[in-house]
Amino acid sequence: MSSQVIHQAASLCLSYPDDTVLGSATLIEKALRETAPRAAASFAPLMDWWAITPVSDVRAVYVDTFDMSRRHALYLSYWTDGDTRRRGAVLADLKARYREAGLELDGTGELPDYLPLVLEFARHAPREGAALLQEYRPSLELIRIALSERGSPYAGVVAAVCATLPGRSPADRQQAMAMAAAGPPRESVGLDAYDPRLLPLHPVGGR
Image (cartoon, rainbow, N blue to C red; front, side):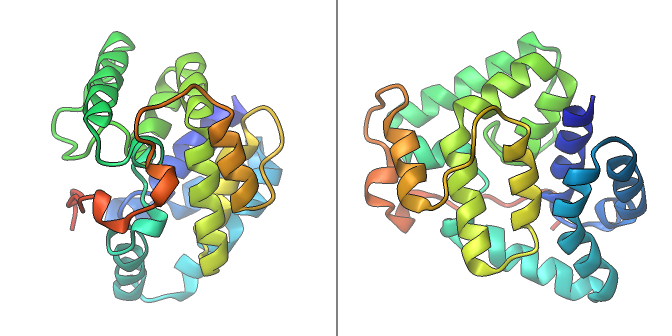
């Protein structure tokens, strides 16, 4: 149950901070304190920052962090497959997995590997969602590390998600890359060269 609460809270927190998202801050804090106090501490830097920062600045920082910088891309298959033909097949497979679980993506305006959608899937279908997050654990860890290196208040949110999965998080980027290399073999992996030109920027609903 606590993992589902963490996944739902993280899905909201990592989405574009529109009025609905920012208006959920009190509910998010209360739910985490009651069901996952350790995770609540990880979310606290973002909650505190939201509380003291003008809304326009919160939105500007979100766009700068996630839309203007590929180093913090929230599209999980980008980190493993880059802009390859395989990635198209991966996205189609994700859509099929969502449909099988009864989760429809129509109207979201986002790709199915967008982390907030994956987290919503994990809340909706805990077993399948946890397996999907574990499958993309290297992507999650690389996002976490990049956000931590930036000093972003969002880093703790991703760290809390990683903490719901089995095993320890890698200490640094090198260990995260080793984790990726130990997984299933992949064609033309985006981790190898980390070319920022590989990821197209996708507009997110609510901008």
